[in-house]
Length: 81
Image (cartoon, rainbow, N blue to C red; front, top):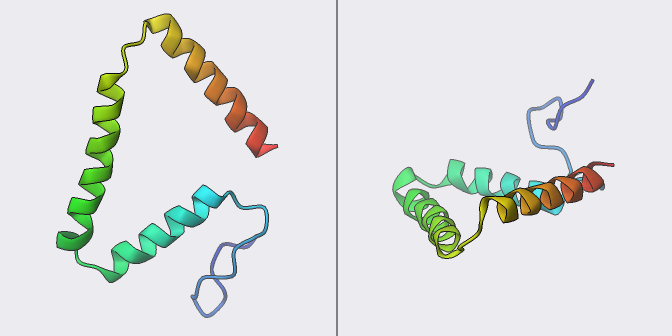
């Protein structure tokens, strides 16, 4: 069983089947490790706050929300296979 690190502790090259979003997360984590929280914290807060504001602007019924979530689950299941 292998992990994402080489024997010397450095990160190994990305696997070709990795989702591009995964690679974005890896880059963000590297950025967070290189920068102090005072730099990346406000940036992360801005992203999260923007997502919350966008969600608050949507006026959906509970049934619409269930339908959207079911669709998203199907898409994500398809990406895993």
